[in-house]
Amino acid sequence: DEEKPEGAENESVEQLAFADRIILNKCDLIGASAETKVGGDGACKEVDEAAAGDGAEAAGSSEEAKKDALEKLEERIKGINPHAPIIRAEYSKVDPKQLLNLGAFELQRVLEMDPEFLNQDPGDHVHDDTVSSVSWSMKGLELNMNKLDQWVGSLMQDLGTELYRYKGVLAVKGCEEKYVFQGVDMLFSGGL
Image 1: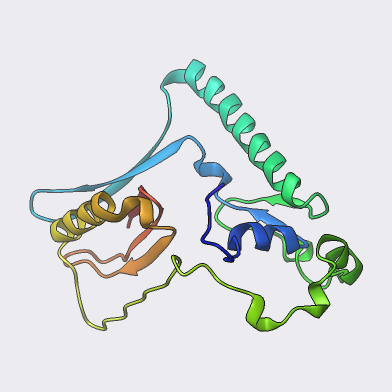
Image 2 (image 1 turned 90 degrees about the horizontal axis):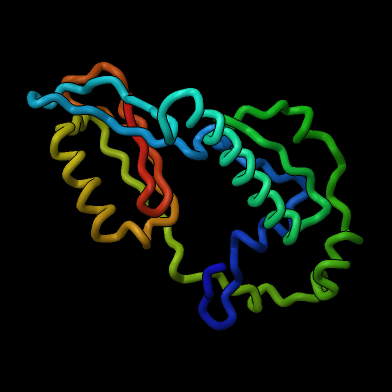
């Protein structure tokens, strides 16, 4: 639904439109939130994940809401690409037989969606300049958990609506396990 600059492609819509399989991942996270607990000494604690709502009655309505949300999302996806099967997944677990050696690409289907597909000048394809990527790798660095939480909090507060997708694995001082985090916009989850 996002408006793109003049001439720029909507990358997510374009990828959906030309996909021969669509993996709808993280279906288990609809209606859930995650929070990392940090002790006063900076030591890492358990990560709690709680579904929205309390008790069995709320869990039942929560499951209905989750089902409805997934169905609405799938309807939107089918509006962009009615041909590609949608595979629901949790933790990216998908049977490889659903993805490999299918011979699923059909040029005729692509030409029906975009008759000029084979006649395009590569210079005509313009990417969205507002999407970029940054990565860091610092061997031997261990982060202070309290400072990490403060930095992530201020990053989300200052740039949350501009953060498209972020993820990482960090070594945290005093923790044997790695801290794994991910997020989209201002939705963030992380833990050991």
